[in-house]
Length: 260
Ligand SMILES: Nc1ncnc2c1ncn2[C@@H]1O[C@H](COP(=O)(O)OP(=O)(O)OP(=O)(O)O)[C@@H](O)[C@H]1O
Ligand SMILES: [Mg+2]
Image (tube, rainbow, N blue to C red; front, top):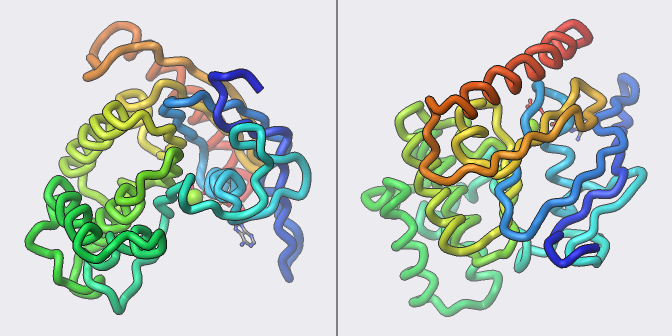
């Protein structure tokens, strides 16, 4: 493994056995994620993106292949090193917004005062300052999603796995949250693996976009985005890449819908 590589996914496959038959979710995916990279995965619904992320996070065991983080095989969750924003926010209903954000720090044994300070500071840019004391049931879907993002970011983990973190947000908030995330990513040198269905988000945020095929998910193509930030989304390069990305995703989405 070279020094620039942080995560190496080596030939991973995953099949789910269910009462109504087996589903091949991911097949033979290999990918090296560089240290400090913002790597985005895009692909049709049901192609195995969440499954792939869960294998990187040690939450789902691969049937074949393995995931290495800094040459060590992943055998289970390692919350100190890998923070995850799940597709479903999965907040603790009995904890307020600020207490949910504090959760990871509490597990790490950070004292109460410090925890509250870190969590409170995060709630500002998440647009939740006035909702710190609310319980999840009192929040909107988009707010719950933002609490989940805060919970993941509060822990200073080196690797951030984000599964459609902005999926439940309205367009405007989504753009602002993307800018905020980009700023955090650039300041803290974290390595991000990000799943989205939004071409715009993929092109605006990522240093690399990985396109997956319809299920069983394989890697269809990898697009490098060696451009600075903020990105000029109307530039000739981005417009060309957008067309390329769309044509690949369109093909796979059509296949996925036909086979579903
Ligand atoms: N725990 C599970 N048990 C059985 N099948 C599962 C399980 N989790 C996922 N699957 C199946 O595996 C396939 C891939 O699911 P996955 O959630 O990884 O897709 P995805 O790419 O994240 O989709 P989406 O874009 O809709 O979130 C789907 O067909 C899904 O039905
Ligand atoms: Mg998913």
